[in-house]
Length: 111
Image 1: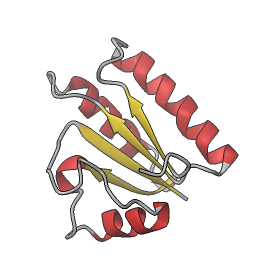
Image 2: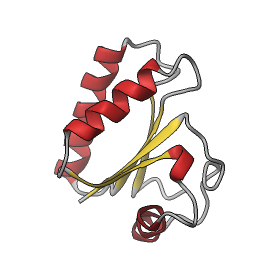
Image 3: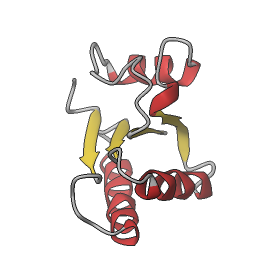
């Protein structure tokens, strides 16, 4: 994976509360957008109770218009136009989660 264009953030194994994780995510997104090198952020929320995944996805929904797309891991496959376009934009040749319908990840494609 091209680390220049795709940043991976593992919130699911960080031990952070949902509120702290969202605050951290806000910082990562703002910094990435400001610097302009990163085009997408892969957020790992883990498979636990789903509380963190739901909090991240709700936060993304509240940010309407801020991102080019938000792609849920279960939709991250060849049939999703945003996923295909994001992968092309980021020059992603491989990603272990592509086509795996992995609910434990969420992708943010930045403008």
